[in-house]
Image 1: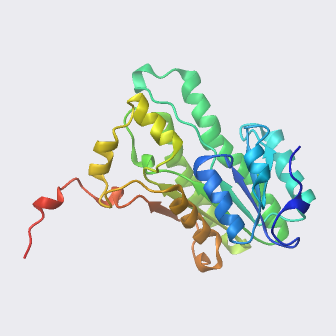
Image 2: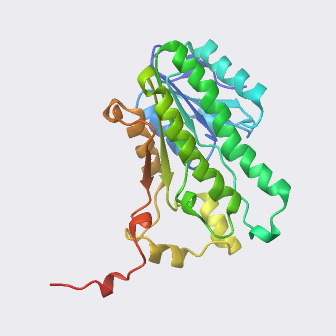
Image 3: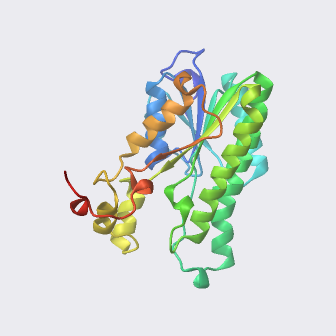
Length: 263
């Protein structure tokens, strides 16, 4: 049975955050960070019966299919009814399909678009309506460096680029009405999904590390910290922006460090 709001470690009047795809990986780390920031956190995910989530102080689980408009309305409305407020939303739910464009099935394309773009739009729209009615709120959408193009991941790259455009548009529309919308575009993060890709041969860790100026993968906690910043008062002048947390991946043009002339 899901934990209730009364079991949260945060004070009864504490702000409430909902994280989609919050059961594992980056989403789970975001939830833990927001608990540390003083939020009561709802991890909304398709994964049922999250024993680990339910036992984590300050995090409760709600089953959510982000591709189902009625489910999104019901879950978000239920959170507002139960907790009395909805202060922050992190749209983190996402899936990938690795396939060359010429080999990609329509169903594979549509599945990724439904979750990564339509799902973000639905959650953004419903959350925004609640927040606008309440006089304010904060939303962070999770994009990716793949938004600039990623061979073998056409639907993923396309949807993550669209999320940046959607973020900018929502930020422009809602900033003056008290709802801040921004995005984080992570680089390569050391998660279970990344390790699965390495094991399957769809990712080369050696090649990736050689391309990152910082020389290492990101930790999920670092992405969570970036989200925490954008949800905080310290980011009060950010609207419609995307922060790239990528170790310099997007600003490096592939020139080996050893070839850079020294004085």
